[in-house]
Amino acid sequence: MFRPNRLKARIRAGERSFGTWLQSATPTFAELAATAGFDFFIVDQEHGPGDLGDAIDQMRAASGGEATMVVRVPSSEPVYLKRLVDAGVEGLLVPMVETAEEARAIVAACRFPPRGSRGNAWDITRSSSYGFQADYYDRADDNLLIIVQIETARAVENAREIAGVDGVDVVFIGPTDLSGSIGLPGQTGAPEVTALIEQAMKAAVDAGKPLASVPRIGRSWQQVFDDGFLMVATGSEIYYYRQATTALMGEWRAYRGDQGLSAEGPKGSYSG
Figure: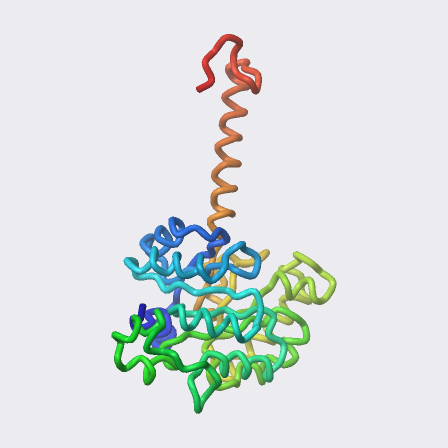
């Protein structure tokens, strides 16, 4: 359902925005993220299991909160972009953008003619509150937040041209895939990776576009903000649940050892 894009307004005002990731496709976590105090959360459909129906359920669940929901799509394929925009998504994060031509095609898929090629059924789609938002057609292009990911060495080479595309709102630097693209997978703190990140940062700044990223080896989320990034997304609910359960199981193992218990518990005990 239509509402002014809070995250885009924050970015235009130069305000730092703090967010998290959702790997699962459940509305419950979307509702939690939307009300926890984050400025935004990113539903990951590139590496997560979600589809269009899941995204709509998550948007509905999150509608009572202040956070902006962004969907990282599986690819830049235009048909799915158009369907998400019709469904009312407020922000799109498009991975693996390597050329300005790709960036222009992404923007075109999300804009109505004459600025783009988005199909015109605005008065019956969720994005316009099913037609009750009478001025939706005039406001839609400007309300949508489009974020492109720079995450390969080739993309860094073309970063200035990508960032300069009209309609690209934010440049998101992905350090993990960037490290893999130069044969250093996962080594996000390596000097070679840092040099590429700094090159991409300069390109975006030169184009007048704000930056987004994630923490990486040697740089906490606080330091990433201090480096000049306007949007930073921390770990996902899967990551935080894994951290919590690992700590809890450590406590359980320590307790079990202290009590002289086996993994199955004391014999004759009720385990329920």
